[in-house]
Image (cartoon, rainbow, N blue to C red):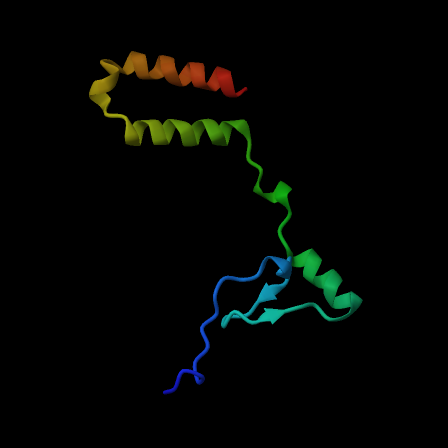
Length: 91
């Protein structure tokens, strides 16, 4: 194996934009207008990542229960109070 037989790819240059990459890191630019349209339709839209405030509240409640020890709250009533305030804050 020589120095010239293997070429390592560094980070992708900033000029690549929205060009897809194959499994080896080579660019796959859409060729032609129809392929470009198909490529644009296949990309997920930002709106698809949206979630309701109830989902956010449930996530916060689960993380709070998992991260903060139960002894911190003193009683279950204190935890419920904080979660109710968080729900009011989110909505």
